[in-house]
Length: 507
Image (tube, rainbow, N blue to C red):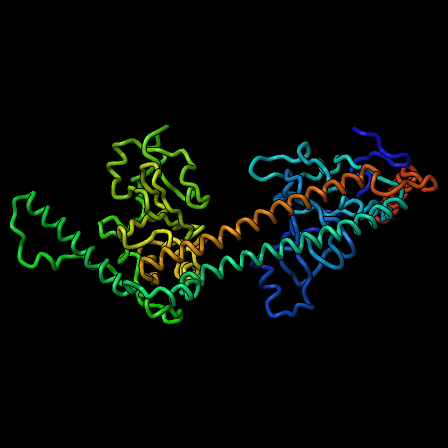
């Protein structure tokens, strides 16, 4: 370890911080809701957890200024994210954060808080999926303590530098938020026709959306009839009377009157736009049809939410045998299909490229095989990712702890369809603008990472004694530590005197 500046001391956290965990108490959200119901904001107090405020409550257990350090659920191993933060005034803390204060009121709370955000927590936390910092481990965290006057100078300089840095970060995050909003506005414009309004003025449709849908439905029926006739011929049978009436008409959803689309567009549905095969719109296998015990090291790929959420066709290593694949052939995918997530993270879409590995979908996905040549799957992906569609998912999803979609729900989704030419134009214009947004977002992400690194450099310099000059006239930290010990001893004696019971007189 590097040498500390003259007048500083190396200590354990318990030497310079009072642990006030007796002040904390967990209250579940249901009880808190009942306690705050009908009360005004002025009647409520902040309720804090591992990394910040998590709600309100109608009373307080702490008053003044405290340093709150995560006990669990904090980003202990992330070198950039804060693990400690300050709470001021009157507030309540749950059992996911430790409550600390500068020892005997003689150590600056801000000095402690900033330093706790530079600590390497690897040796002090336990657990695998949920890391925990116990009180005993926390007390042994190595710290440095500067003379009182220098603590004040350090905190003042830190607040000056970090304030400027935080202002820059706030601007970057505001720009990030605006880009996200712009992305959503572009998707909205793509599906209500405003994105290509100028293009339509100069390019009258060769075929309107209504005419396109009529042609799709005719071709869909013609493919079904051709397959039926082929079956009769293969079986050596004469087609029965009125056999065409058995054609399964696709569901036509109710048009959305709240959304205005161009006159040349048409409302339709996913089933109408599918290729007309029995499995053109199909959810994954249910029940015991697909279990992990069926997985093999290599074979036909099993597509699940991991690929869809990541937007990565090639991710994942779950496979099944050829025999199992043929058994579940109705759930098989092909290039050009769209996969939709149905559970939890609902409505995420993945387009399968030409080199998509043959396989099937799992029960958490639905696949759409679109009408060949008549519908651009990239355009349908835009519709399914639009704010309009996401609102539809939220309104119609069912489930308790998580949202769940199903085939019936998605069949009811009304889809605005323009001419094939305009579909391509929408995808092209949107792609160009989305690429520009992605470039700006990447630049912002780089700047945010640089700001986080700069923040850590500033903090490290502060607690290495390099941020402000030392003053040889400052009272050394060793004297401060002696005063802390004396104050604590005095407080302990007072407590013992108050709690000791008088002895009975000898008889």
